[in-house]
Picture 1: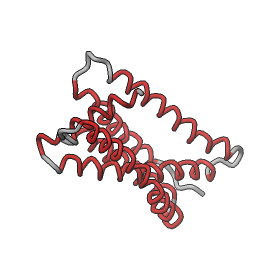
Picture 2: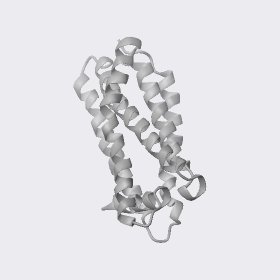
Picture 3: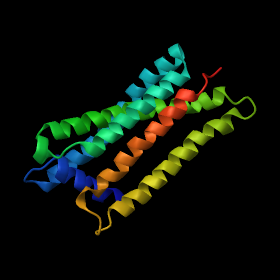
Picture 4: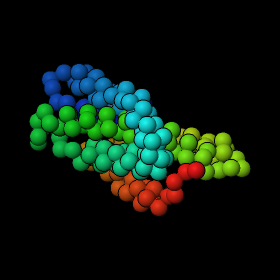
Length: 179
């Protein structure tokens, strides 16, 4: 239910029409395309990881994630740029889905390959921090749905998250290649 507020704001911002229920369906569809794109990302980043190494695969998946997330946060509304607005949003969600699947599997494999004592415990950190990220996202969704916040408040977590990816990209750049 905490996600309903964001979906409603996205529906109004990117899919204005006379029928609000259609707007909601289009917003949920935009949310879903990311999940449909994930297997494609697993294939792409799996090939990159196997052929060129885990470091480039993880680096480029985070770059894709950061750019897509920031794009969602800064894309102008439909009333400003028309049909380009939902198209940019959908493309950003597809890139996000491709990037996140490469990120999840790539980081788990990287941790397994670089931890000789407890590789599977190390790889479980991927799931732990993924769940922690979902929890933080849920808390942010609750905060930005408060009535006192401005209508553009839903954009802030996307912009902050996209910016934080810059820190992760720097850290990834300094990583050594897995063995």
